[in-house]
Amino acid sequence: MAEQQLLHLVFGGKVDDPQSLDFKDASKLDIVGIYPSYEEAERAWRSVSQVNVDDAMMKYVVVHLHKILDPSH
Image (spheres, rainbow, N blue to C red):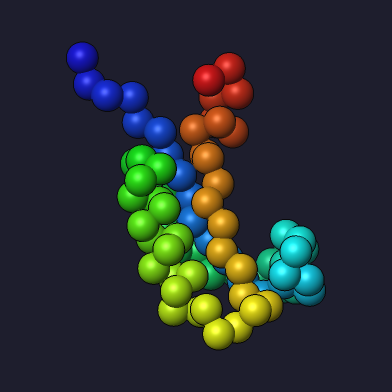
């Protein structure tokens, strides 16, 4: 039996406050990609976060799409 696919979205953008998830302009979000596992999404998140480490107002997140697509999961 094949392993269940658990999709994850990585995206980010400028925030008003680094402690929040209130993005300044949703139309300018950077969509990094959709990944078939948390491990791959985390690698992408770490990579893009490292590139932007000097900009405290730039924030990237991992969203568990599989939880949104199938809330019973």
